[in-house]
Image 1 (cartoon, rainbow, N blue to C red):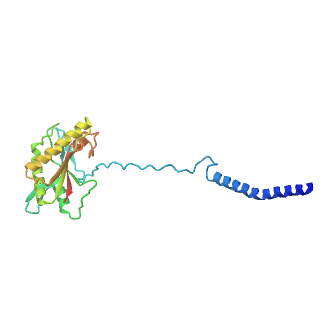
Image 2: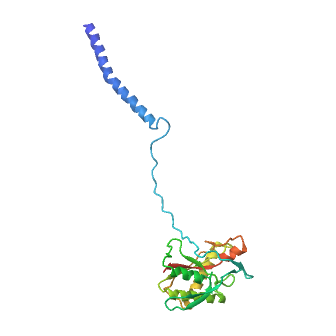
Image 3: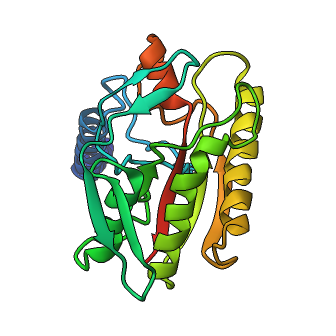
Length: 239
């Protein structure tokens, strides 16, 4: 009977090993898989939480439609443009005729408004620098010498009655930036007031904004560049 008991014990042990070995093998396989997936190598498969980013604030940008025009700085610090040869422009809608320089704001603006293929840039705008609009030094009063060009701009606005415009004022980078933005705002508004005084439709001018030293067209390290940057420009918003 003792012999039978020993045989039964051995048989039970053998049966236990039969189910224990597959279990151990399963554990080993699982451990190996876990190691290969990264935990055993010191890395983790857990992905960082995705944090939604706030959309970047949109900023207004500009492109200068007027190509560089040669000129020079006068004794008052103004940039005097070389307007080129005088040409005649016959305006549509009975708005008259203009005799202006080939490089003038009027001619470039007229060409853009007349060209059906020239589209409105809703991102950077269609900006034309005034070639003959100036102010009293350090102030926002439009110089009397600017009247001729502003009258021409009024005539162009009447020739294209569905067109709308925005005025922009600019400075060089000398002095306080906040003060420069304020001055450029006053100057752009002064030009709008003068245009309306000369007969421009109230609906033709949609806005005026001072940008201060932003969007320079000249090199602020030179007197010539600074003079070019002290300017006013007109942007075609619709045509």
